[in-house]
Image 1 (cartoon, helix red, strand yellow):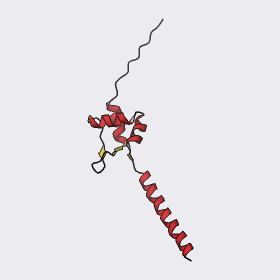
Image 2 (cartoon, one colour):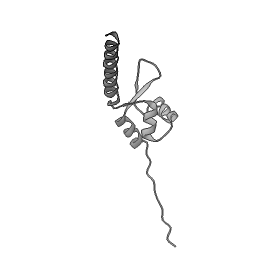
Image 3 (tube, rainbow, N blue to C red):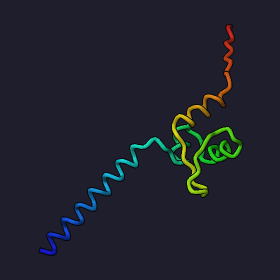
Image 4 (cartoon, rainbow, N blue to C red):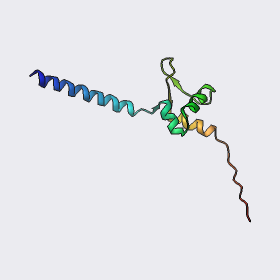
Length: 91
């Protein structure tokens, strides 16, 4: 009886952990690594942009951990773009 009860408790705890994980992964907050992946740049570029005030970030608990919304990354990329002029040489 105890073994069955133990298995039931373990299954229930596992199910609850899965629910928390699904809820957490469905959020739009990105870590520094995920933000760098979205922007296709290095993590150092993300930290530099935050430090210079060009990229908005949320700091967790006053620690170095930063979180970003995808919209903030996209806005930073759009603001930091420079127009590219292509010249065509006709021969």
